[in-house]
Amino acid sequence: MKLIEEIQKRRTFGIISHPDAGKTTLTEKLLLFGGAIQTAGAVKSSKINRHAVSDFMEIEKQRGISVATSVMGFEYKDTKINLLDTPGHQDFAEDTYRTLTAVDSVVMVIDCVKGVEIQTEKLMEVCRMRSTPVIGFINKLDREGRDPFELLDEIEEKLNIKTRPLTWPIGMGKSFKGVYSMYTRSLVLFTPSQTKLNSDDAVRIEDIFGPDIEKYIGSSAAAKLREEIELIEGVYPAFDVESYQKGEVAPVFFGSAVNNFGVQELLDCFIDIAPNPRPRMLDERQVQPDEEPFTGFIFKIHANMDPKHRNRIAFARVCSGKFERNKNYLHTRLEKQFRFSNATAFMAQNKEIIDEAFPGDIVGLYDTGNLKIGDTLTEGEKGRFKGIPSFSPEIFKEVINKDAMKSKQLEKGLLQLMDEGVAQLFSYELGSRKVVGTVGVLQFEVIQHRLKHEYGATCDFVSVNLYKACWIECHDKKKLKEFIDSKYRHIARDKDGQYVFMAESRSWLSMVQENFPEVNFHFTSEY
Ligand code: G4P
Image (tube, rainbow, N blue to C red; front, side, top):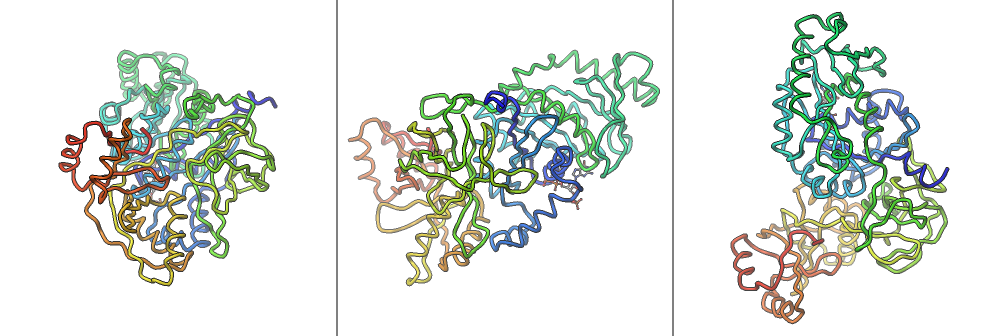
């Protein structure tokens, strides 16, 4: 198959939601459609198996949350779908943000009872930054939820994106009868079932004002549906794929993931409208997926599952060309050639060695410590893919070594964990103070646990009063040096050696900004 055909065949996306809205359930139903799993419950039970093989995952198991991000590939109606799973827990938000750099579109699950929740708002901000196309799935229609119009208004208001319903619910909770699809002009009737797969019982309705509809849902539900559809067609502009692909409008579906209802409508429309692998910026140049030379970047590093070996798996997104096993690629940060003899793909939840991969695909590369998040691989072109920034952490703690004999192990362990993106390390210019910054408190436990089990090092974390880490920049090198000299107690370096100003409070930061107007302060490492 030609490169362009491979590209057109692919859709790479992620599901985002607030915990408990139904992301795992929807993932599982999508995998069932794709034939990637055979039984309901497989996603959850495989999670449990994974826990058992690693101490790190033990923490996850104890807390009952999904920490790891994984990739699931499957085929559906001649389309190769790559679904990137994201951790739902807010403490791992940074991991989710990075995964979103590797997708071309997103499905957002919203609980119809709870509406838009905080975690969805945060994730949607990240999608908006990149104009990632979003499809909404309003879930749990088998429960008494909120009015669908009200839910759409809330999405528009809180998530700052226009909506366009493509299916519409008929009743809700106990009186839920099904959905009418404006996209396919058909009626799909609801029968609660956790095992049914296809909605074969969809009834094609050419004209919603014709007499047929009463037969299926009764006259009062039919009258209400007609009224609502009329209102929708009057109020919402016709669905426009281009506006969706630009991230301006989110088509919305209604359903019940656990009952496998409304999922096929979502998936069928998804393969129709979701974008193929999109271009990506390499420094100042836009790399098109159909360029012949291979390019890709690392967005995630997975901890070693076997404590005896320190191997890790780096997840690389193919951006252009064809990735080939055993071919030499340039690692642009280290300016070194690397060959990957056992690159893996993630199909049907199994890892398998692959010979080639195409734009949109995710390949797993075995790594012994050379790869970092954000690294770029090419066939010779220099530069770095943009869009994988670090954000200023929220919580800061100083690392205190508890075993002087193990300071080397501690240092090494910390650096390697930071490469994996578990947290961010800031090394002060003055003395050897090291401060770890995270989005949530859970990471500190993960770090302590892993340092002990994988590196034999023990440490304490002591809270430090910091407001933000600010990446600093100034066109005038002399002025930058003056600033650094005068604030040297508060200057640290990040993992890439960039200067960071560690601000203790918002008011103090404002004061410093006023005193040094030439210096720019950024809350992300990419500006
Ligand atoms: P998450 O990954 O977004 O955190 O959510 P998850 O899929 O784990 O779903 C959270 C809970 O919501 C689960 O119940 C799940 O069964 C339920 N759920 C998902 N979709 C629907 C739906 O369409 N209708 C209803 N009524 N419930 C739904 P749980 O009790 O936490 O787990 P379980 O024991 O049922 O698996």
